[in-house]
Image 1 (cartoon, rainbow, N blue to C red):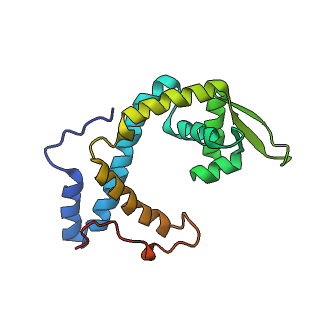
Image 2: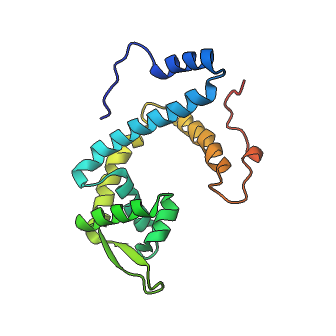
Length: 182
């Protein structure tokens, strides 16, 4: 699990107070810093349950994506695009998954320079076990009730769509999540 900080105060609230004194309103800084801290916490929780399966969350995501594909294989560039990661990160993850016997790699017959990654039977089996572990963990979100998870998703979705994750969507036109926006 993530190492508890054990501080007698909330460091993000403390930073926000100082920020307001020096720079002005701190709501955006406080929210962004909280997102980064929660990411650290979630990744630590995921790593703990995935480590016995020779997986990180990034490698798990690759396996799930391959499981979801019709043929159980995808070009590496498609994997990178769908998971929104750099090609070097995809290559690293595929190398590790091949080493663990979870993925096979072969030349893409439709692209002379491309590579296809395909999930193996062993990879499918580990996805099942790893998914059970992550689901039992509530994907690290057990501290939030279901309704708050949905609200959090909707709030963060607006940031993602504002960054252009989905073409042709104007986040200003999306319905608000119902969160009090005073």
